[in-house]
Length: 199
Image (cartoon, rainbow, N blue to C red):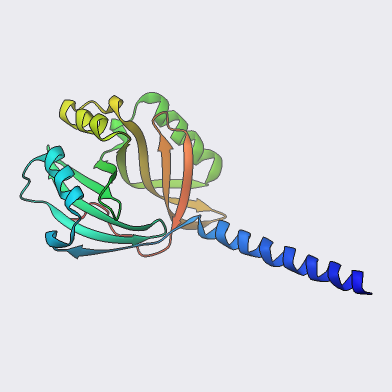
């Protein structure tokens, strides 16, 4: 009787832990995001310095604080060389990535083919709403990529916001693809979509 009770208790604990892991897993598939405009005085000094090195003294720069499923970050938004840029920093002011507005024409043929194949294999239909090139990696490599307008020096990914239809139900998604168009992850956009590069 005592052994049976211990086994039932153990089974119960295994079920609870499994449910917790499953819940965490499901939450990881959703994108939550809330951003608020902030004054430049609230931005970490390290982030301010890095933005100045990357873009010089840009007068149209706007700062935001972002709360998301990934945590808290700071974001600078600006127009640079005619394109909208979004520059994300950690709470400490370390550069995480730069997102640059782009379009389907900016992708190489291999990336287009792989992304189209992913859409065809996973959805009844898709409609791309917004696309950005995401640069990450070493600060010096990102700086060189921006100066030379040659993104091959940095780690390149494509962030695509798209409407995907499954089982005749449409959902807004954010997909991340590598520089060859291979799918890395997709998250459902839960909150009403905010244009990341809004001005």
